[in-house]
Length: 206
Length: 273
Image (cartoon, rainbow over all chains, first blue to last red):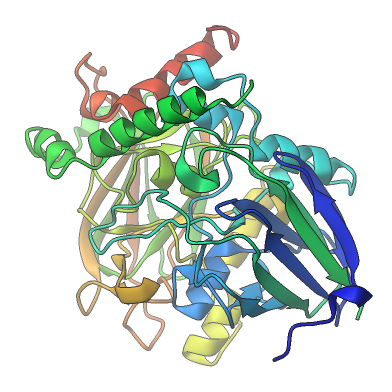
């Protein structure tokens, strides 16, 4: 499939460490560009018609019989419906099992001294509030451009990213969706190369 | 905070140290294996004893300090588990944090199940190894339609919505779950597998580290090998745990668990640290 024409897209530049949200209509598409490389982009989707229906990482993994998101992955809702399909991926694979960083989990992972650092779930609840969503709506997300191999013995860690400047993922929407993005602010692990950078989002209406 | 080259170098060094400690070969297993499996449940301590028929569910409050035992006397291909803080159900089980923080998807005895608020909800004080799936979800109407050709066969997803509803919660509160007796593995290139060719027997002991609302569903995991829906009954026992010693395995196995319990303690003193 040929990537869509950027000239016909809405362009949303997203500065380092901040959140963004927007709609993608059914038949439209969203492209997330890792403009500078090695930047995790935490992403959630909700049905615009009824936000109780939302992206389900576990159903997506289960249906695809694969732990990672990559080109061709069907992103499935908690009601078992197709929300979006990954039509282009110039990286290889993306995590959807390790969740978003939070102020609270940072203290457990990295020590209590990190409790005043900004985190993805701060961005998610702030962006979600604009759509009537609360913390209980913030389910496990996709971490585009985040490399979290799961080894046969279960070992799991965020390791150096695979994405180079300009790498992108593109998804076509099968229903009207609301997209929440946190351009990950984490500075305590390699998910952003230890230095968060801006990204670019492009949305096509059809 | 300004990100200077010094800040980056320090963060890299610290992460390398944390990862090496968290994934040191055999270190956690040695601590775990030095602690015996829990003995039979002392009947004098039992608060509640129940049975979940195949294809049915259970829900209830398990108080801090009580242990919830889930026993498969006959082979089981999965009992799905979800929990919320009874005091504030917006705090709930978070499987991604649970596996990420503890550097492993192999949840089992000696580990803790974490909430989205950086606290331990449950200590896994007993149970078989490599048999708690945290990534591949639960049975659902659409999974049952694909597996059994019948979307009306009972599913954990429907059970959890019903259990949640009976405590004032809704579908929005039914987030990612874990499944006991489900030895799901991740193989080459992320492909999912199932260790063994059938179900498992055994007993999981889950010690509540705060008052929790629990939902259990006795429906097989969709990756379970049985092609027909025939789950056997499961035993559920809630009992008063023995006092937790200072060197308790789950509370001391890793620095991450210790910090989670520091967050639990802070909650009990009004959130102040």
